[in-house]
Amino acid sequence: MDQDFVFRLTCAAVLALGIDPLVQTIVSAFPTTGDAAANEHPRAKHAAKVGAAVVADSVALLNAMANGLSKAAQVYGVLLLVDSWVLPFFEKDESDDDANNNSSTLGNLLPAGSSARLKDAALHISITLWAAFTLCSIKHSLFLDYVAGKRLGRVSLMDTILDFVVMGVALAHILSVLDMDWGVGLRSLFAAGGTTALMVSLASRDLAEQMVSGLLVKTWDAFDTAEYIRLGDGIEGKVTAIGLVETCILGYDNITTHIPNSQICRTRLCNLSRVQKSQVKPILRFKYSDLEKLPMVLQDILEQIRQDCASYKLIDDGSKPFVALLTEYQADHIQAMVNTHFDGVQPNTVAYQEIRQRVMLAIAKAMKKHGVEFALPSTIYYQK
Image 1 (cartoon, one colour):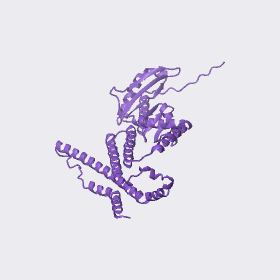
Image 2 (tube, rainbow, N blue to C red; image 1 turned 45 degrees about the vertical axis):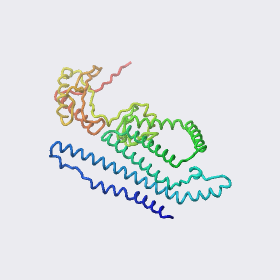
Image 3 (cartoon, rainbow, N blue to C red; image 1 turned 180 degrees about the vertical axis):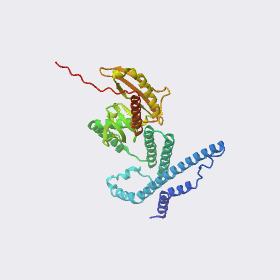
Image 4 (cartoon, rainbow, N blue to C red; image 1 turned 90 degrees about the horizontal axis):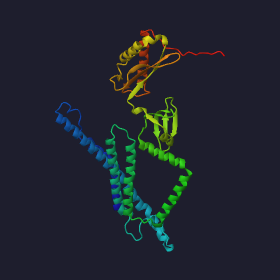
């Protein structure tokens, strides 16, 4: 074991294990901006905010570079070990099989007669991987800043696609550095891969459809995990997982329903977690004997709702209907409708149930004030 190998391997180990603690120590020494500038001039506040943003970006850049350097150092150490301990055995096998003009699998990776060893290309490969890892980390940080406080979904899928693109370019550059000659083997691999893909696609078309639908669901960005949705077939609950094949919804009865993504793509969907307004619309049944009292009853119902729901954001400015009206004459009752809307309250939440209860109690108070009762359903029997 030569000194050059020991030196390179030691440097790789030091970078792999020590770069992250070193960067964390440097980052902890960065100045932080707190509330010191809270009572200063507006220009000072703006300068402090800009300084905080610069510090945050610098910390993110240092962390990305350190993370990429640590991974690249690990790869460099592995390449050194492979070059010094693994390849010599295959080189020995090649000398034994030289009489039969055969060569090992790893021996075919490097061009014949090349004097370059894997150790010489290891540094170039590690630098390429470090640049790729760093670029992916910076890109990920930029995406996180872009969607701060918003939904991921579409951006998350784009982040993953760009990761594949960056790593694919890095892999292509590494193959060019190694000067690999795949020749007939690569063409055979592509042919076998195409045949295998055709067989798999014919045998599992449903699975392929589910996977494509899973990608569409992620790109669609109609909902995300931990959000409450309602499907057109009545299924409603919290989204616990979004996979390539199925989506899991936890109902209010704590029963998880597994729904194929192809079915989700073909059905109507409502995201309850992204609804910031709610409606309470009870239907009332009054007696014909109370018809003359009903105009005053309906007016007092609205006033009572204003009083009892004062702690909530009742929308009564005309942007949404806030009415109590007679709607239809039926055989045994007069039908009326009370239509109210509230801002900042999501449907099917505890706050919504409380508001609905207050509206119903307000209706009962206004009816009791005028001595009005609900009309009970009546059944008429005919004797033949």
